Length: 141
Image (cartoon, rainbow, N blue to C red; front, side, top):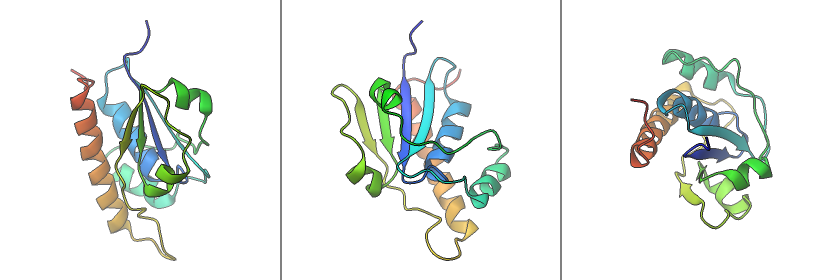
């Protein structure tokens, strides 16, 4: 059976925003929805990302940063770009694929990122994921 939706969350480094989106979507979506995330320049998932997700009972220890995979990209039915950087540098989204831009500020910018900023991004991403899955009737029953 072919999955009804294939959602690909993309951001710059796949160390925070897209990881959060992937984790929430996998927890909220029906089992037949395929969910992935990636970044332009993947780097290790940030400690603050782990911390804020642990606060809400989501363990990211099995997650790892990934570079954009063109096969996954082309097979996606929805590509969610979480930042301007990815919007400008991302490959062209194939015809028939829904292109979504959330433009969430990188909460890890700066010399000393603040956990409060990561929490704000986490909560905004959670709401966006919920809205997206509702729009496509893809929430778990």
